[in-house]
Image (cartoon, rainbow, N blue to C red; front, side, top):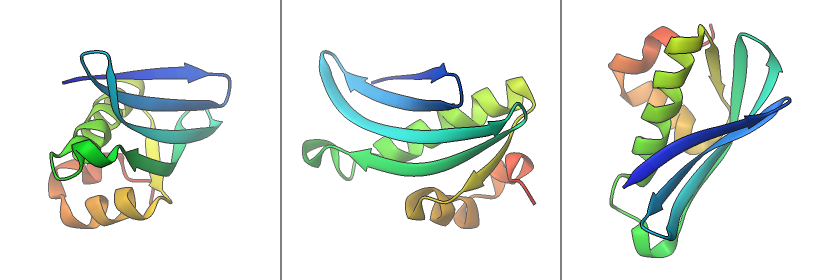
Length: 94
């Protein structure tokens, strides 16, 4: 499964694909150069239960670390993952 990030102006997303098929997307807003707000996570029904959401979140976290960006998780899925996973707390906006 491939996960990539696209960003344009003050919005962006992580997209997960399996071959030519879209597996899911996680969208974010970028109110400033060093802050993003994850606002939505969507996984296609045939990919549910396969860790697609987590893979997209980890891709965004990796990108945020590289760029010096902090994350506010408004999306319920992302918020739950930030509460559950200790290894991504370093990018959480306090």
